Structure formats: structure tokens, C-alpha cells
Length: 172
Length: 174
Image (tube, rainbow over all chains, first blue to last red; front, side, top):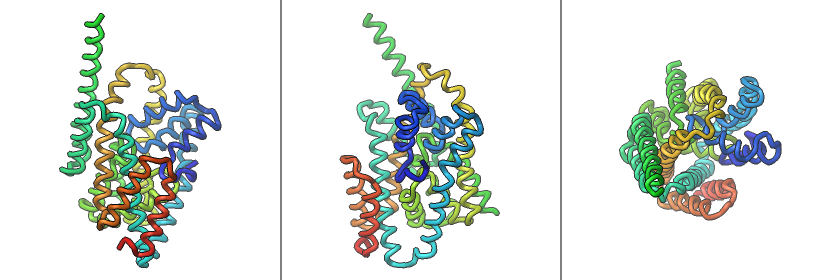
């Protein structure tokens, strides 16, 4: 599966795990993914660990992760070696300038897709904007941005939840 | 040896900070490789990132390439292992407990807070990266065009990457 995921493995993972092999139901897959996004680490790697562990414990997790990573790591090192060898040629340099620019576009589109669902929640937008300013404009260390914002974001989310709950109570 | 330890430390903590995926720590990885350790130029980091995106597999491969560039094969293995090791152990432990709490309200509260922070960090990562790869107006235009096309259509990203690389190879973007 590691080899089929150009530009990200996640859509493929879902297709194979849910639709082809039927190891998990769609709801179970979403549930697992939610956990894996909430925990740190590469999402797909986390999913493979969780699915592997669920069915075969530690051995399942290990075989899932090595299956996912071995071939891509070998390929990317091969590409890196080629780049180091031929990177001085004008055509190769040019190709990489183009490739890097397009990859930026890919990442930008991906970021906007992730950000899109929160655009109607002013509080979430404010938190996202602060995170953006801290990381991109002020270039603060990530630990700092994460620590301060995650705590205040969770606090804000729980306040809002409580308020909604008391609104519901008042209406009754 | 010193570089291997530095790689181990950098990737070890980046892995644990990568809430929402590795893309959210790419700016931090760039800051550390380029500004703190001075292992390579910002342009070179962008090239390695592009290479990792173009290769098949999870997008954490940029760490593998950084490790490889800094300390060869052992660097690549150390960087990859350090990045995924700690999160893997964490996920392994937590995923078994998590299943029981799948309907708990606190889980949704935490998720809502994290989503907002992740959205901001991932966008910051994208803008910082675009800043590095936009060497002139032509490359900036490619970045914006690719992002625009991908937001509006389900076109295969590989097609766009290939076109941009071919365009670059002709020297048109220099």
C-alpha cells in the first residue's frame, strides 16, 4: 500500500481497509482516524499501527508499519542519491524548481481543505489565525505555539459546549 | 556521530509535536535544519521536500531525505526511526484504550480544539514553504495555479507535479 500513495497514502488506506478487505466498517475507520489525528505522528503511520495492533497485537503493528514504510524509504533514498549525482545539471535543477513550486501548491491546497470546515466558527478561526501568526509570521518555536494554543482551544471549546448546553436547558 | 544525535533529537521531538500530521511540523523542521543546525540552504530543503512529495509513500519521507543528506544511510534510518518511533508507541498504547471511550463527550471537545490549531499550523507550513519555493513570479504563479486547480477539481496531483517539472526542465522558470 505504501507504494500506491502518490501525494499521500490515506485515501488508498481507506479504500483497501474499508472497501476491499472489509477489515473495518466506514464508521470504525473514521473513529480510528480521529484518534490518529488527535495523537501526534504521521497520520497514516498511526492508522497502520492502530489497525495492526487491533488484529494481531504488537506483531501486527510491526508488520503493518514495516510493510507501509520499507519500499517508500528505499525509493526516496534512491531518488535522493540520483538528485545528489545529477542535481548540478541545468535541466535537473530546473525540473526541481518546477517540482518544488508545484509541491508548494499541493500543500497549500491541502491546508485550505483542512481549514475549510472551521470557517463558520469565529472562535476556531481566531485560534487558527493565532496559530498561523505564531508559526508563520513570528516564527515562534512550535512547542510554544502548540502548548499555549491547544490548552486555550480546548478550554474555549468546552466553554462553548457548556454554554450551548445551558442554552438548551433555558429553552426548555 | 554528532549529527546523528542531533537528527535523533530533532526528529524525536518533531514526531511527538506532529498533531494533525507531519505537514504541521514541516516549518519547524525547516527552521531547525536551515537556521539552527545550518545543514542546508532553504532552497535545498524545499527541493528535498518536493522530492518527498513526488515519491510514492507517506509524506513523512522528507525526514528520511533530510537524514540522508546530513549523514548518509545511517542518517536516513535514524531520522525515519526517531520520527515515527515515539508516536508509534503512543498510538499502540492509546488505541487499545481509546476504543472504550469512543462516545465520551470530552473526546469531541478535545477534537474541536485541536482541529482549529491544526488548521492554523498546516496553513502556516504551506505559506512558509511557498515563500521558499517562490524564487520569482513564475514559480509563485505555478504554486498558486496548482493550489487553485486542486481545490476546484479532483485532478491527479501527480499530473500537475509532472507538468511543472517538465516546464522547469526546459529552463522556462529560471
